[in-house]
Length: 270
Figure (cartoon, rainbow, N blue to C red):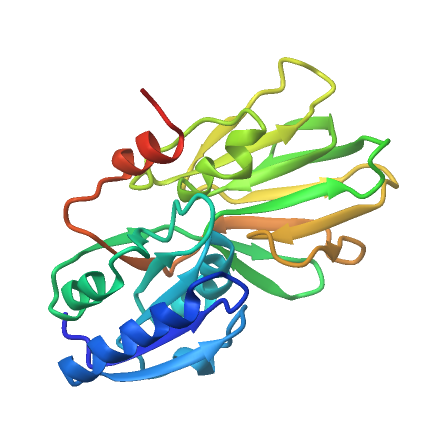
């Protein structure tokens, strides 16, 4: 894979970003690569049009703000971590020059990650690399949610909300809510209730070909969030249909780094 045109999406709120951008500019110039720098996220598809790859300088939140546009444009992503955890931003910021040189020379591996395709009742849609979260906006009230899988009833949940996660997203909010860790190479969708009233309501793992539908069964005020982005009012957007998207996101990762290396490091496994 030859990278001749590189887009760099930068989170300027992170410390040390200017030095990282300068290092990338120098490496790109030496390699004869055309570099475009973009500030702010989420980004539009137009921002990535024509790029061979996109680098993201920031944390996982910044990375998620670029994922949908990158998947739709077929542009591989890599991240230079300036956030806290860095599950997605796999390249450290300490030696940016060496990291960029290795990427521009083709010294990386490509991982394909599944996305959720989320279709709302109002006709809009979104793609999620991590998850869709539906929650009650009144923190002192539970909601009632019914879930159907390929049209068949799964369960009615009384809970603070539901998390629908990709395998990649099982290391995010889903994990904090008691969900399982899933290998990103698996083809599944993970459903995890948030603070379910019935203690036996645990996570359910669905085959990646399953079409799920989420309905609200009461008048609770609900909010929706896709990949942690701005919360949307659920009114008028329910029911929601979720399936595995046909498009995937390509991630550029160091050849020596595995998913379980990341888990051991970030989750501080002994």
